[in-house]
Image 1 (cartoon, rainbow, N blue to C red):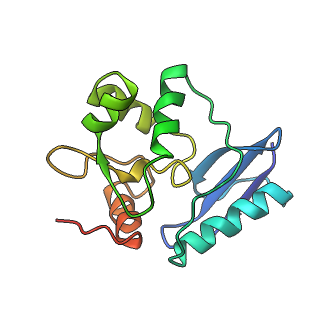
Image 2 (image 1 turned 180 degrees about the vertical axis):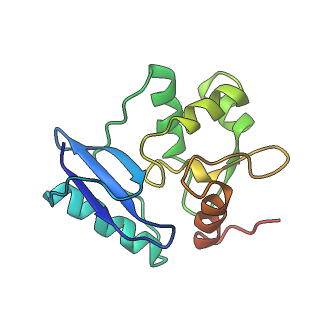
Image 3 (image 1 turned 45 degrees about the horizontal axis):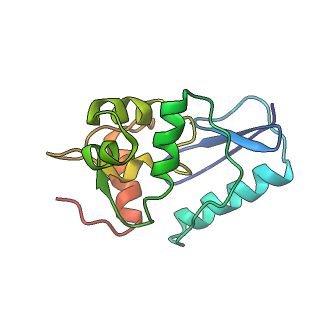
Length: 149
C-alpha cells in the first residue's frame, strides 16, 4: 500500500492509498514512502489547508468501516470549512445517537479530510482521536477561524 509522509503544524502525518483511493491519514511517519500522483495531490491539498486556504478535499476516499460509520463520515464531509455542528445534530441527520456518532468519529481513518474536528459536544469540544488529542482539534478549528470558548 503506497504511503506518503510529510510534516505539518500538528506533527508528522502519513497518507495511505489503496486502489487509487485515500484510505487513511495517520499521525506519525510511515515506514514505506511512495509518491503516487494521488498521494502527492492529497499532500499538497493538506499543505494548502495548513497554509490557511479553504480546502474542500475533493479526493477519492475509501475509508474502511461499517455502513453506519460510512454514513456518518459522508455527513461529516458536508460540514463546511469554518463551521461546526454537534454530535446530536449529526445523529439527527444520519440516525443513531450522539454516542454512536462519537464512536464513528473515533474510528475515522481519514481525519482532517473527513473533518471530524468540526463536531462539538453539547458542553464542550468533545473528543479527538489525533495524536495531540484536543490540542489538535483546537488547532484545526482555530485554523478554520472557529471561535473557541
